[in-house]
Length: 260
Ligand SMILES: NC(=O)C1=CN([C@@H]2O[C@H](COP(=O)(O)OP(=O)(O)OC[C@H]3O[C@@H](n4cnc5c(N)ncnc54)[C@H](O)[C@@H]3O)[C@@H](O)[C@H]2O)C=CC1
Ligand SMILES: O=C(O)C1=N[C@H](C(=O)O)C[C@H](O)C1
Image 1 (cartoon, protein in one colour):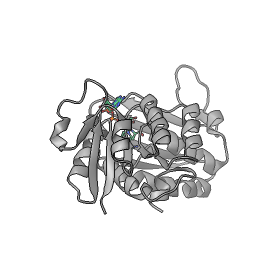
Image 2 (cartoon, helix red, strand yellow):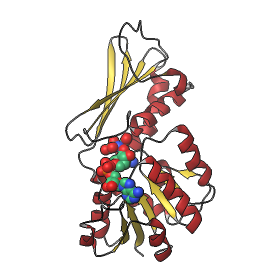
Image 3 (spheres, helix red, strand yellow):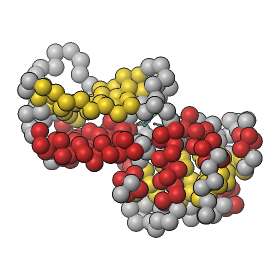
């Protein structure tokens, strides 16, 4: 049976990619496309329910999974709405504060909720193998991350870079809030061995590049993931929705649960 989908932020770079793919794939039924008020022009191309109100769409299609790639404030409202009406949601939005992420976790006890800052297979496989590299290479290898994104991106560092940094910190058994180095400028002194640097570049139309560096004595390893197209994230989001449609609430799911 086709998985019913509601796409929120349907005119965005990600929302439009997801809506187009879902509309052309018999495994999915695009039940509704939602945009902010004053920004729905052109959405009639999908021949589906067009609205500025998620609650209306969820009441009409109670079994549908909401896919939300918008901004943090809107995604928090999505969670609230799903809780009130009884919906499920896949959230790809990044830039949440730690309090906002706690809100997602808290509500995942009551609604089926998945959040992942990067829905590509490649990044999620990388997250699985990084801890092994950290442990094998040991303390002599300094850990750094860089990310490049298009000039329209609003949050920094990227959600993926933060997730990668979190993964490295956990593998080393340290607290990212203490060892994360998000800016270097001026006479900063020598690098400490425990710090994990995260650097941001912005420009042009880069879809999303992430590099993890292991900088050791006499050598270095650089592992780079480059997204060639937003379709790689969109396919991940659709796969996550298909999976989430059959999950009960209980925890804040992530892509590692889907790809298991
Ligand atoms: N998890 C992942 O794999 C990925 C996550 N992202 C994240 O997804 C988010 C969106 O990225 P883009 O699509 O590039 O942004 P975008 O700015 O192109 O799209 C956001 C869309 O949300 C709409 N929107 C705003 N308020 C709304 C409301 N109240 N109701 C309905 N729609 C509303 C906007 O009008 C816009 O069309 C960002 O946080 C980005 O970092 C982006 C790519 C992949
Ligand atoms: O805003 C984007 O474009 C992207 N955002 C995500 C992030 O913040 O990590 C994922 C991807 O790299 C594209």
